[in-house]
Amino acid sequence: MPEHYKPLTSSLRSRLLVLTFLFVMVISALIYPTSIAAFRQDYLETRLENAQIAALALEAAPGNMVSPELEERLLAQSGVIAIIMRRDDKSLLLGFNVMPEEVSATFDLRNPSLGMLIMDAFGTLEEGGNRAIRVLGDPMVPGTRMLEITLHESGLYQALRNYSNNVLVLSLITSLFTGILVYLALHWMLVRPMRRLKDRIVTFRQKPEAVQSPGRQNRRPDEIGLVERELVRMQDELRQNLKQKSNLAALGEAVAKINHDLRNILATAQLASDSLQRVDHPGVQKVTRRLVNSVSRAVALCESTIRHGKADDPIPEKKWVVLGDLVTEVAVSLGLDEDDQFTFNCKMDADLAVYVDEEQFHRVLLNLCRNAREVQGEAGEICVSASRDPDGTVHIKVSDKGPGIPEAIRPTLFKAFQSSRAGGTGLGLATARDIVLAHGGQIGLAETSTDGTTFMICMPGEENSG
Image (cartoon, rainbow, N blue to C red; front, side, top):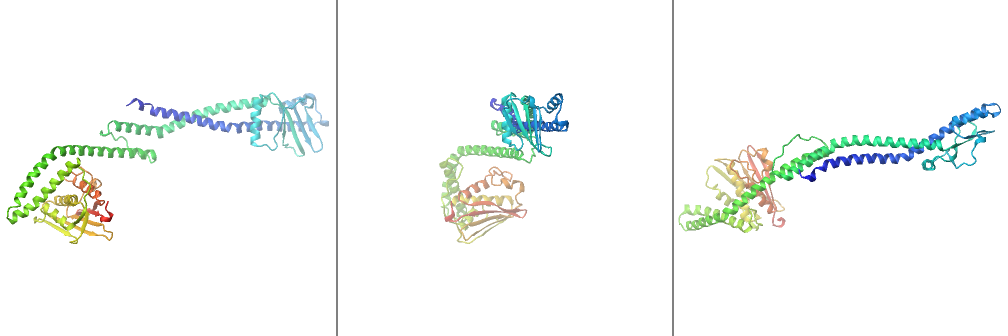
């Protein structure tokens, strides 16, 4: 395998892993501000709740006074420096003697906004826990107008740092495991089938004619399975087309080698047929006319092939041709008019004309009628019928009483080298199709069964011709 193909899947897998890791980290980073704001709010609200309990203990004491030792214990258990709880009729104070002279900031948690909470959380981290703050909160005790606490921010700062470190570690672990799981899932669902597709494409590019082993058929119902099945189908069709092109190239080379000599031979036959025309005998004259027509068409075909340098038909030189006369010439060329074993019927108006290249369209009808004769063996029936639509389109039917066309070969009926008969080249119907399409018409299989086969040709009028 070429070197530049090797890192394809490994690069894709590593990118999936890195991108998944980064995406989870980005999501964690987006969640982090709101999470530390909520953590800080919970921390301060817990201190407010503890402060209310301590204030209630103070209120229950005689004279609303406690000893310095008990006051110190209540403040320490509450995690604050001072507490002020204003009731309707009085105010309760704890830590008034140790309250710091300067408070750096005041925060009101009674109606906080999310943006303010986030800014305050980052402010706490930025200050490093070196300030004393005042916090106002909603009291839970009935009859309380306001609750205020004062505390050092060092404890809050340390708690926020620990929480942030835990969030970072958890995000890293989550990102890693999520990345691995997503990587494994994507590797199984996408990378492996993409690698199979890549290998198949590279192998096909290197050896398009070689038949690859089919392997296990992919039955996945999603887009990957559809692409893989369509790729296999497309490669099979391309391989068949390449084989057909090779056959055509070989045929063209053979035609180019023998065409010149064949033209000379036909020219000699043409001279001999001209001599026969001078023989005054009814039987000879009848046979000679058929021979002259066939040789003339063969010479014209050879000259056309040499002139155009390929086996394709030249641009049609159209004119109005009486279809009945053309069908009669075809019958004469095949000897159907003298064959007692075959019944040849021509069902159309005597003046029905088609706007076609006479020589090319003669080949179309000749190929169809020859096939109809050969599939029926020694005896049979051929019917050529035609009618014209109001828009000028002529519908021509060529029918036989043969055994019908097998269903397996119907899709490739008009492809070159797809003959359904032993000894056939598979070029007759393909040539007929190309000529009809060049005239702007259509040809197809109208019906087929064990009772016979009918081909339909639709030819446009002059105003609709291509």
